[in-house]
Amino acid sequence: MEQDKWTELINQLIRQGVLHSKKVKTAMLAVPRTNFLPEDMKSYYASDTPLPIGHGQTCSAPHSFSLFLG
Image 1 (cartoon, helix red, strand yellow):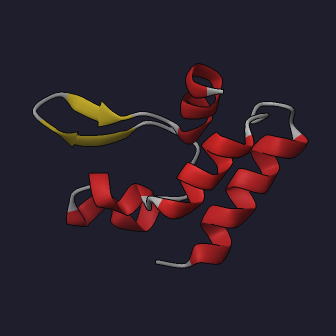
Image 2 (image 1 turned 90 degrees about the horizontal axis):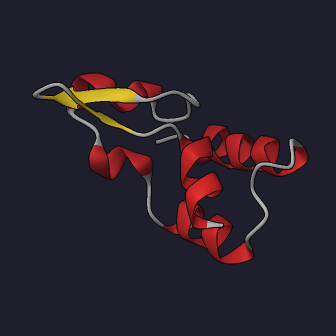
């Protein structure tokens, strides 16, 4: 995983005023999104869009975590 892309996305969400909570930022940096993605989706981990995880389900877009959690 390229942490730089993930960190940049998080910083972008902060600049956009979407991510406000230090606790959510810390959690997003500590728990890689790739933990929740199937192998064929892992390369898209830093995309701010929902990603399919199978059975008609998705892993939510990162901005939605910041909206709902802080």
